[in-house]
Length: 403
Ligand code: AMP
Ligand code: TRP
Image (tube, rainbow, N blue to C red):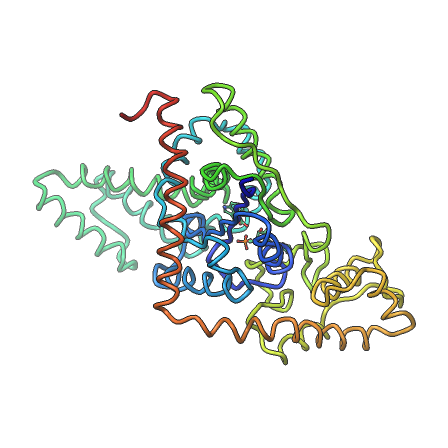
């Protein structure tokens, strides 16, 4: 019988933290034994927020190293970079004609990220537009007397005259064009952050659906934060199958019981997140032993003294979950281990366990040279494309597109 297939991915942005490892990577490694596994580095998802091109290129390769160091075995699993299989972008277009505005508007990640990252105008920028807007308006009214105490305004006026001469039009036509463009810039600085988010950030879940559906995926191991996106993938697949005939397999989520949402060490109400401004909230996979110990020592705790899993004490429960997952002990054994011990001792043992857990990983990260990496990613992309192409050809044929 053919093996069932899993597909998952992570973005090559920021620093990976122990939440990514315990919520996702750890399961990828376990599942590759049993499933035909495809693990993607989703660089096209990364550009939904501004990225520095050089850094993005570097992080894409770094993430491949992290997959390998975590134990993803290129002999068993397929590892590839999303943009190396152009079928992802192509199917995204098709699926964006299947997805509805309303369902994307309900995605909570868009709401969160657009609030957080929508480019906020700085006050100086606002004031700057305001000032030249006023100057331009005055000029439009044939006011040949710009305020002399503003050097920038005077030189601005001169620029207008030069531009008009070059174009062979009147100053007031140039001014009108400038006003129109400034008006739209000024309006833009007044819009809400969500309105300034990229369209790509909004349609992000459609690209994720394309990733999954191209491979006729059975199972998608992800953390809790991706559950809603996965439900959208299922809805899109079902709608397409209904309208055009059965084409896609309907994927199931695989969300681990423990570790699906590791919380910030500084605020157990928030998930540990790559984009957290406070690095003390996260244990990064490449943090050294000393940094890890310090972060754990400074982690917030709850009132009370017992070290148990207890929903009403989220900080301790989170630390205990991390302990459980890095030691692979049962929940009962963890609780028994700390019975009668204080927070200080608990934190010390937890720090040691995390350091031990990450040590072999950190050593392996350095082992993959550039050439090996290139070969693995090339082979991965070839295999991925061979599957993705078959699905895309079928999709187009069913829709009356293509030869
Ligand atoms: P990302 O960092 O968004 O590329 O996420 C990569 C994977 O890590 C996804 O499957 C996420 O669901 C998972 N993940 C991210 N943050 C956490 C967290 N705090 N706890 C558990 N899993 C997480
Ligand atoms: N959106 C996921 C995240 O940020 C990453 C991702 C992209 C993904 N495509 C995927 C995960 C397909 C699973 C399957 O974590």
